[in-house]
Length: 182
Image (cartoon, rainbow, N blue to C red; front, top):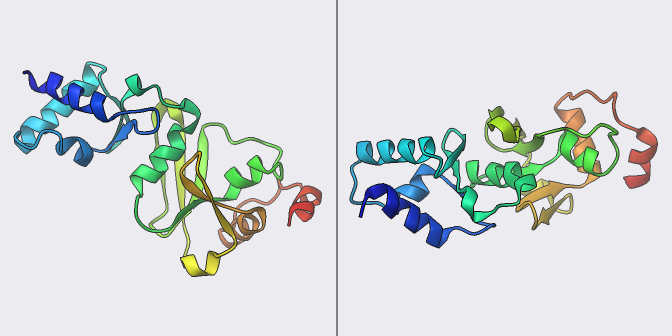
């Protein structure tokens, strides 16, 4: 069987609407008999031929799994930084709660124990990781797990604290709504 077909068959068996994003390491495990160079070439070919869609560096989407397109960025964030502390906060949480009237289009913001960075995910938007020095034990009661996005989510008061701590622009905040929710 051709390697590309072998890879696609293996992915088809693993993929579902909830499991549709794969790192090269995930895919590498499916074809251990190929050399690293042959595997990289195969991955490039799979993306070029449309079998996989490159979301960003180190992350591929298997579109035939029929994923929820509205959550691609959320799932990508979890896949890109699987270890360490990462949680939705800042403008994303405040917009969802109605504290900020403007809705960030195609952008999510997360606080992270890793370094700050903005990851461009092409047509899906971008993921902004903002460094925090807080420890998980300091956030007990401030975070709630969101099963739909498969990420931790800050409550409004924590998102406001994060906004101040990171010196974000507070001009868009409707303080009357924020005071009701805190």
